Length: 284
Image (cartoon, rainbow, N blue to C red; front, side):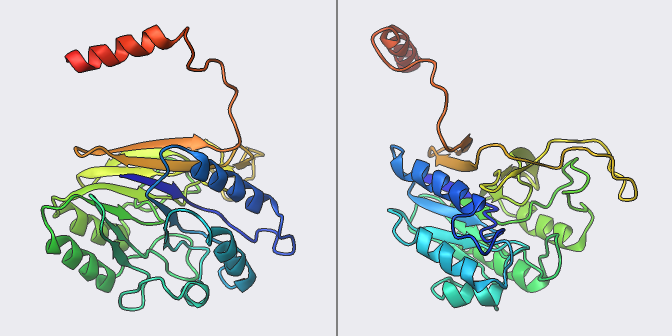
């Protein structure tokens, strides 16, 4: 099973331009996913789908660009989204208690998608109703490997202006549910515009970088009263994630779209190396 992930698309950053930079970056990522072999079994789009959740034109454009993909697309919502406007354009999206939370079934690994949106707040949220839903879903199939997908990573990141309070109520509430479950093989998130991997609540948390421009890596303290000219947003190539279920665990890869400088190809000069490596693997 191969799960692709895109996140923080921010379509509509320039709402008057249908060919804006973020649309071109999204197109490059989708082209890379469609052209790869093997193709993903499904695509997770983990929030901040549009720049302004109340900009319905951007949701319409997003729906159009994703309509003809050769694999299903499943959504989580981020802090830039609006539930009502998202659901107006994606009425087929499943909900629970008014939140965009649902289970993706019919695969070797079950995926539970969480809604961490609190409209008007940049950081995450996870109330008791959402926690009860997650606890019940995890208890339904306690032996089945399960991935949790969400927008907001519930961690202190070291990025002083893009981080969560690890003692926030919603973080502690989510921790309690995840830590008590034995079937969560990984959590997949976005929001940070950077690739980050850590351990959290007894499982792996893999944070996918964005299709939109990235946040600069800077672990120095930031003073909100003293702008110091440091880089904040950088125009690296658009990223995506690929999460491979091997049968024994989930392996996460991150890559950029738009082409790479190829230094070697698989020809006769590399055939002996490939043979040796595969023979060695077979003898292990």
